[in-house]
Image (cartoon, helix red, strand yellow):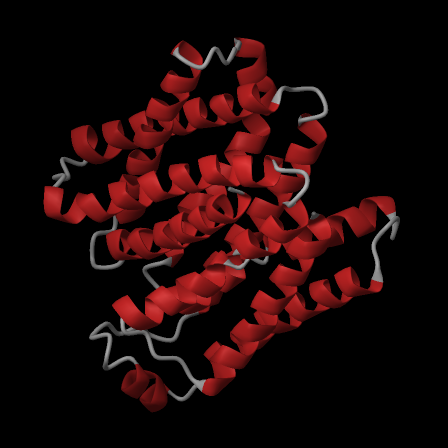
Length: 301
């Protein structure tokens, strides 16, 4: 069962990347806030199910205690949605998913080497080299070559510092959220903390709705919003499958690397469905990032 749950998490999270990209690219400057609305709505429904039918307890104290972690996660995701307007999913996803390497760096800084082995240090180095390499390739790519390789997707991305800065910011904030999570969860129940996170996301969705729809009078067109809600469903389903896959202690060593490689599937979906075509240098840097993430996933188990 662990294998199918791991595969489900991989497919759902990579699907979330794909549909979030479809929902956020384009000329709608409020698309990222509408994406927050979609994710917050779905997560809020899941939180309601857990509280009223699953028996999960969420108090005001839990909400406040977990609020800094929730804020880091939600802010990182929002920035990630903005970034999807400026860069190919095939580049954005591996950078965003490098947060695990940053968490390892934070742990090294605050606690020393501890039980970290050579393979983990090598994996962190691979991820860092890969991310820096993607930034260098993006910055130095010739404008004409960029335009030629983007012809197939019929979607043009101009060379911009934001293209790399935004997913890197996502990575940094997500890493800080994960690091803070490891500290806060020493005092909180995991189910209660997760429900608190989902309720906070729901509150953000309500605020975004008031601003986008009621204040700015922006329409919500079903055809444009549908991919966002599919992405939100994939995000929530992936989290559900992940919890149970990792919960199988006998097979966690095998489940972790399968799940951690979902950004590789995101690259594949970007190539197949969005017609994104990258250079050999892009793929070399992405391969380094994915390999590092998989190695970290193995040893994290």
